[in-house]
Image (cartoon, rainbow, N blue to C red; front, top):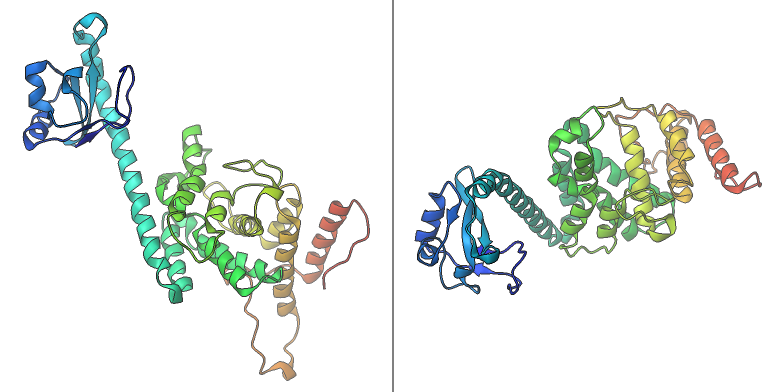
Length: 370
């Protein structure tokens, strides 16, 4: 079946024009390698008469094929005054046809990939008792796109959950934020993998493809009935910034949920601690300093404070000798990924928190966390 994608110039045209095709029509178009002029007699060769639009409207048909497979057609109506289409115009249309075919083919592949990804997520969503393990596996699949992404979504989910705990959020909210962190980059399944390994600046079209992962990811997760309501918003908005300089909607700090703010900090934090094609990973002390300087202009102050609290707890656990009387107590799980060296002292973290509060309060005395 041929179904219209776009139409222009016809005074009356169905919202979606449809031509059911018989095997003889498909055979004829598959063997037509140049634009075909149509007349009343030749229309039957290529088009059926059982559609919702008359085939006699059309005077020329250009089959669209990719690697020999028919994927569509360009159909031209009657010219003004009923004059014939010149051979030069038909030749030009024949040269353009492969590019149109490839564009439609790529769009169809992208839509199929989104549908399959959404279907897989729906299967995951039905297994409530296996949420965390299942989403961890999904995060690992997302990160398999390129070596520089390996483990990123898993770490973002775990860092986000740790900050949610430091903010005093309930267990269900922590689980939601962990899941949102696991899935925040799911739209990158549609991004060309060579872009992740590019060491130079992205071209404008490449940059647009990269930033569109937030919108595509939102489309994917919006089709899944999660037990948590904030996941679609986090997937779409985790690159928004407090001053409105982020994407895709240029939202400000008060226009996004706390879950979005937490995943944004976790994503930025892990990105700085990871190797990228255009730079080496940064040491933890420098990352903590840069993150604290991004508040409040780019990142939420309370969330950054929660990050510093968790980093301080890790630092204290490395410098405090074991307490014999606490031997039976459950050991605290470190916040940082095992591959990240906690080479920052509690005093340094206190100074970062103090300076951040001083900037925020313009020198007024404020309380410090312990």
